Amino acid sequence: MSTEPPPRRSRVEEARHWRRIEWTWTIIPIILVMIVAGLSTTLLFNLDTGPTAFGADPNLNVDVTGHQWYWEFQYTDPYGSQLSNGTGQDFSNGTLWVPQNAIVWINVSSADVVHSFNIPQLGVRIDAIPGRINHYWFTIPSGTAVGTRFLAQCTEFCGAGHYDMRAWIIVTPASSLLRPMSV
Ligand SMILES: [Cu+2]
Image 1 (cartoon, rainbow, N blue to C red):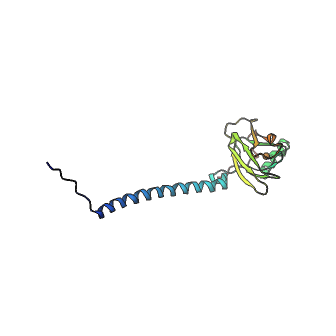
Image 2: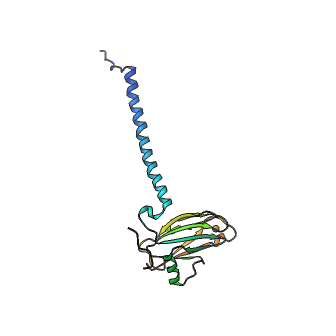
Image 3: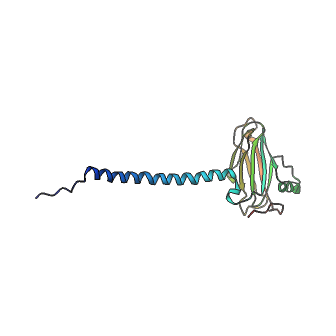
């Protein structure tokens, strides 16, 4: 008993068949890559723009300057100045007072060598480079109690005093001095 071999496709049909598959597995990944590239590029630019890109207005604007071997904090808007006057603290001594639920926009630089500003608990890590201002922001998680301290530290070896280049971020009561959120 002889079995009929299946009818063979012509070479032209064969080529057409494979060409369709080639196009499919070329076009679909290209579309996927373009979607991922678009989303991540947008996110990258938004990260640079800061909280406003995500619909939030920073409550505080703070200049953070690394020195061998301490951190200097300076509020750069009137709201921060009021806050600092209100507590009577010296704000250049390595303590940053931040109200509950605040969104803090930081402008990070260095007065001497390269440092890196790091608040592990708040997910902050940004290089402090002389002659350059790096922007970043963080939020105090809702429900954080007044008096909570977050340790800030330098994570770039910057000389003999590097080990002690620490600062405290201390949470103060939510203040009416804060700028209202923009809508
Ligand atoms: Cu340092």
